Image (cartoon, rainbow, N blue to C red; front, side, top):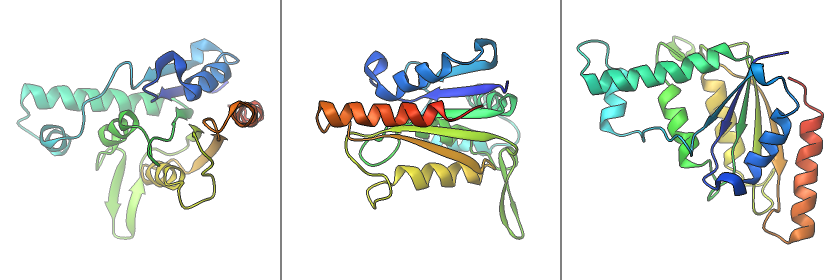
Length: 195
């Protein structure tokens, strides 16, 4: 059994379809091997001047900067301790929730999760698998309106996670029948994935 880090990012709490899909999938796993981080229930700081300069600082850190570095280190250590990363990523306005973006911003650290080389960027978080469960009100997969999929894949690849599988639950706001079909399709996809 692999160790799993599961991220929830929906702002809808118990009404979140991505959260429900994730919970159903996780219930089949050994809970001793699962760490869940709810990025909406326990929000991370938004990238601003203080956060950005803290993540780049190398010495003489203030107490506030050290707290940001400590949080970033904790998030990165959670990834390093896991074999599989499962991200519940609902589509909000054609992209990921702010809560997930905040997590991305806090783990993207030069020299820690990626480095620049003469041949380009090299991700430093290697040997991990990622499963992204994305829910959408409409139908966007394989269309120009799906900016979430390429962005998440690009970001994860940037830090070294290139084994990425997407699970789609679409048409959730297009009537009960289509919504049910979208959820069933996602459940079927998830049932076929082993971690």
